[in-house]
Amino acid sequence: MLRVLHTADVHLGARHADLGEQAAAQRERQFAAFRATIDLALAEPVDLVLVAGDLFDSNVQPRRSVERVVGELRRLVDARIRTVIIPGTHDVYDRASIYRSYDLPALAGAVGSDLLTVLTPDRESVVLEALDVVVHGRVFAAKRAPHSPLQGMDVRRDASATWHIGMVHGSVAIPGQTDGDEVVVTTEEIAATGLDYLALGHWHSTSRGRAGSTVYAYSGAPEPVALDQDRAGKVLLVTLDEHNGKKKVELDERQVGRTRFEKVELDAAGVASQPALIDLLATRADPDLVLDVRLIGVRPDELDLHVEEIEAAIGGRFLKVRVRDRSVPALTEGAIPPPDTVLGAFIRDVEAQVAELEAADDETAAGELRDALRLGRLLLAGEEVTL
Image 1: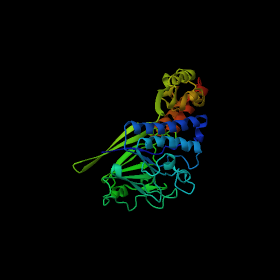
Image 2 (image 1 turned 90 degrees about the vertical axis):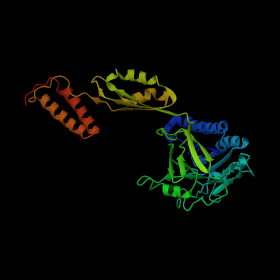
Image 3 (image 1 turned 30 degrees about the vertical axis):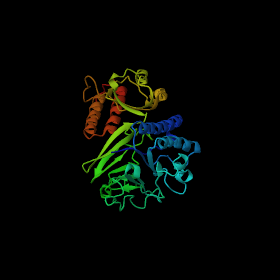
Image 4 (image 1 turned 60 degrees about the horizontal axis):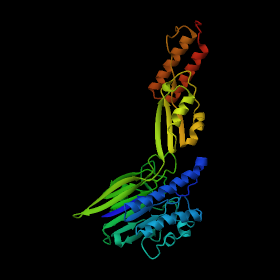
């Protein structure tokens, strides 16, 4: 049995320009997730750790950041847990590659051993005899691959080890969606490799599949790189076992990231005022929480909400907060004035248009007409002028 920890897209050193003052905190969350990944590898313990690209967010990193990473990798080396890393599309193996500037195996104390391997265009695989596994990871010296990294790969004739694991940082082809991606592989190519497991990076959400006899999976980012990635935050524990000549691959998701996501829908009819809404949302305060609030339903005429003010009032208590007002003003209440009055004709005409737009699922236009109806009712209130 072989136990593997699969991670990717750690993106250490990401700048997070869109987060403002929260940028430094999010970088620390990402490093904490990487440390938690190493903790998990040691606690299980696993035999092999795979980093399927984009360990670093770019090839430009201060030495102190590289040294922090090396310190974590050294913990695996000291525990005799083997690690294989491939460059991705952010830390691409070009002339300026961070893997050219820093010899990670040497810095982590793995010189002369197979305890830490960085696969490059000149070294596309590594045989780990102690684990009876070959790890294949074809990478290129440019961000855009000249062809699929799985092109022509077929390990079924390779008897050098029981297990064959592949690593790719790229997209599994989806027609119309991945055509412009830098590195693309197809499920047909995956099936043709005969790999036991293909560890993928590049997509930040955890997902899995099977092509032929090959199980493939994205581990996802161990900590969200962008604050809308609510399927990030995990790594994969992969167990490869063989009984009576039949191979079996099992995957187990494990949480290592701290960032949490919560979506809340509130009926505007139950909101007394903007200060009351602010107080209600503040009870959920959590510096690791991305809170997405959506106001729905019919709002009372007297309820005056300004989402920018709400977000500003509570934003500092969350990692990020977003408030969207999708509530609508009430349509006419009570008796409608006669149709031969200005107000009566206006109400009937606009309500009919609103009904048509709602039937056509045009919520935006229907909402705008509802607002127009509300304002018209206020302006024309009491008018009994006959047309």
